[in-house]
Structures are given as structure tokens and as C-alpha cells.
Length: 107
Image (tube, rainbow, N blue to C red; front, side, top):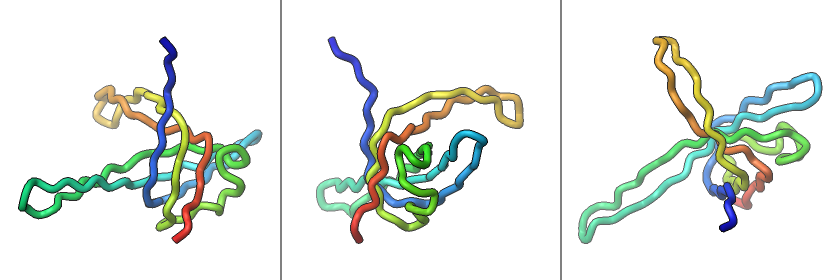
């Protein structure tokens, strides 16, 4: 059986933080997606989920300023889990989307 880790998101950019390292530049982008559900004749319920997207500038995106807050984007990549210890000493797990490609969508 073939195994793969592949994710595709389409949503809106909430924030972009760019960090420069000696050998590369990394963008930390928050992307929000909405899921709308409707129960029979009731009001539509919108569930917004925020994702952390990590992208290497020059690989997944052309320039650090190619994606800005409020842009509609499509992100292709893989999930990575990591653990950390919070300020209260509790070990937590989070998931990041490691981007292979980010496309800015036409508005």
C-alpha cells in the first residue's frame, strides 16, 4: 500500500511573518478556511479553522511580499506534527502545514 502525506487548502491569509536566516528565508503564514453546514431548515453554521503554514521563500513562494493579509490563496503541502512545552510546563502537540507551493488566487 502506498502511503502519502498530502494536504491542499484554499482560504484567506490572516497574517504573514517573514524570518531571515543566514541560508534561507522562512514565511510563517496563518490561513483561515470556512466550512458551512446547514441542518434542514435552520440557519447556516460557519466553522472557521486557522492553519499555520510554513513556506520557504524561493521554493514555495517567489518573494516574501508575494502574499499579504486578506489574500485568497491555495496551499499545497504536507502536515508535520511537533511537540512543545507551554509557559505552564504542559507538553502540547501542534500541526503545521509545510508548503510545497502557494498560489495567490484571483479576486
